[in-house]
Amino acid sequence: MTWLITGGAGYIGSHVVRAMAAAGERVVVLDDLSSGAAERLPDTTVLVRGSVLDRELLDETLARYEVGGVVHLAAQKQVGESVEQPLRYYRDNVHGLTVLLEAVVAAGVRRFLFSSSAAVYGVPDVELITESTPCLPINPYGETKLAGEWLVRAAGRAHGLSTACLRYFNVAGAGTPALADTGVYNVVPMFFDRLTRGEAPRIFGDDYPTPDGTCIRDYIHVADLADAHLAVARKLSGERAAGDLTINIGRGQGVSVRELADLVGEISGLPLPPVIEPRRPGDAAKAVASAELITRELGWKASRGVREMIDSAWQGWCAQHPEAGRD
Image (cartoon, rainbow, N blue to C red; front, side, top):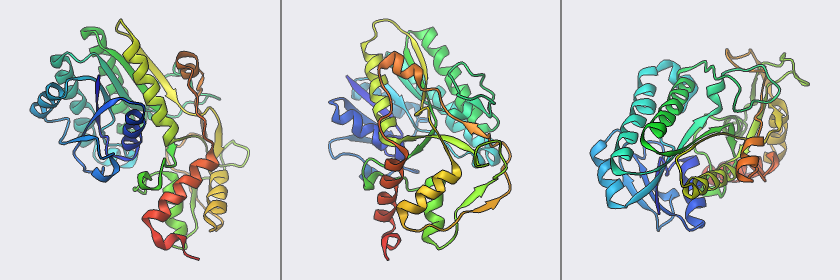
């Protein structure tokens, strides 16, 4: 069976492509390369350049490669940008998903894996976030992911698709330096960026009700995340009847932002003390996943720790910014 992976040339997508291809799955990538890079992909991977908004291209691709399952990763994903450009986010993330699902149903594809986000939960005041924790997103990005989940499940029920919605927590690290995160939007590369420019990393708020006053988050290595996609894809492939699976992808362990900043300073050799700035609106004091369901359903759990995430991310950062590794 062939899997179509949308957004497969991006940071997360390229790890998923490589994990699935290494396991013997046939993979075709659809990516408009607006944030992805073709050189991230294995030489044997077919790349179709285009958008999920292009129904004609979707129909042609699904038929030509006899696609039996879709892993949908392509999306706009910056929280702040979603507040400024909600129409763009709803167009790309919700309308784009609608067009893709229409093509999937028309082509008779029966397996669909959707990249969701812990942003669907909003800021729940709970010790561990389970899949049954109420979803109350607080920004357009989270809203589009929750709407996407509703749409995927509804299409699954109506058209006999086996579906899965994967709620990612905070993703970090790199499988290889060449696949490292090239953006400066997530906390780890943001710390690297400031440190390599001789500026102290920023922490937003140190007066939260946590042991050291800073926010606590659950971090997952991107290679573990990719392995989770493979496990879910194989679960969908093995099912005879249509079904739905909604799961958190995290480690179930919290790390404070101050602890993260200290570890980044130690590994990078640039231990500048962080500066404290005011809280950002909407930041929860603690957001840690319960990772029990995916272990129970699939026998899968994350195997890489935070130190390995930071070390691999730093190696990737230095590969992309040679000046960063100079003494």
